[in-house]
Amino acid sequence: MPPPATSLVEPTAADMAALLALSQAAHWNQIHHDWAWMLANGRTRALRQADTLVASTLVLPWPPAASATRSDQVASPSLAWISMVLVLPEHRGQGHASRLLQESLAWLEQPSQRHLLPVLDATPAGRPVYLKLGFSDAWSFTRWEHRTRQRSVVTEGAGDLLEVGGTDASHPARGALYELDRQAFGANRETLLDDLIHRAPTLAIALGQAHAIRGFSLARPGRVATQLGPLVAQDAAAAIELVDQALARVDGPVFIDIPNARCELATWLAHRGFSAQRPFTRMALGRRARSLESECPATVWAVAGPELG
Ligand SMILES: CC(C)(COP(=O)(O)OP(=O)(O)OC[C@H]1O[C@@H](n2cnc3c(N)ncnc32)[C@H](O)[C@@H]1OP(=O)(O)O)[C@@H](O)C(=O)NCCC(=O)NCCS
Image (tube, rainbow, N blue to C red; front, side):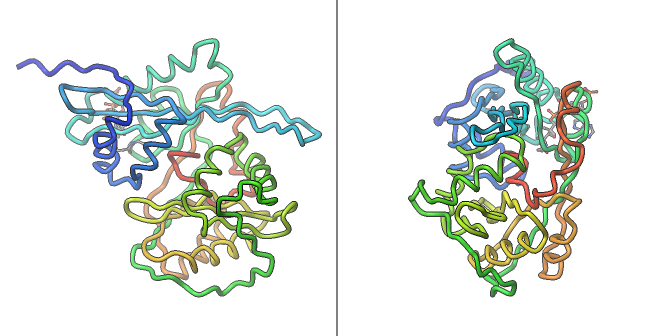
């Protein structure tokens, strides 16, 4: 019998169960809210065979980081964050991921999209696929996990802790938080930051004074674990204080994706029972990849997650 026809489709909320089946088959952490947010904020595509979504991919366009409040107005690229590259296990090795990525990259080549620099965080399984398509490595990070933990007690001082969660979008620390993230990530992620603050308000914390914070930490619930991140801080002491505070507010399994260059935090977590789960590689496409720093920016202590940057 010939293989069933494979068609390119744009998934909608009606495909939620199939999208969750894709991420669950890869043992990933996404829940309904993650896919709903990504469908609403990105360009999702999938391959359908008969009634089954066999593969998916997503492009999240992040606007440039330059802010009206910055006097230097550093020119930074807009990013096209590529993620959720998933193929059902029994359909792998048939070119589905390559086909979806080529379609996304062709879309990004259109004049209206060419300002976007394609960037992604690759799993070891995905990296060979991206290398063949012309992506190159920037820097690496590691997922640290603790599957059996219970809420801990705060051990590091955090006298200037700010709670930035809740429904008050006008919290004075929000602007400083957005700015710190722009400088660290290199693009504007306010929509994501607002969503994360809304999803886990008690885990949305910062250190410092409202208009001059020295770090912040956000988090979100997941299928397997609570994911901490992004964690942006001026130094190791602030990063550790924030994680210490976050771990005192959450029960159960925790994931946190830490750049390999930030070994002080990884060592601190290892002493508290965390272990390294798997590596990821940040990659960017083509000549313009040079504009992505090859070193992880010094204020990034945990990324938001490979699907978000
Ligand atoms: C990674 C993944 C998306 C690849 O999907 P796929 O449809 O099997 O990939 P393709 O068939 O398009 O493979 C493209 C090329 O990469 C190669 N390749 C694919 N997976 C590979 C692997 N694990 N190791 C080495 N090479 C691999 C293929 O041989 C193929 O090479 P070719 O063009 O010379 O034939 C799929 O294995 C998967 O869903 N894994 C779990 C989730 C995951 O890690 N996703 C990546 C997120 S960054």
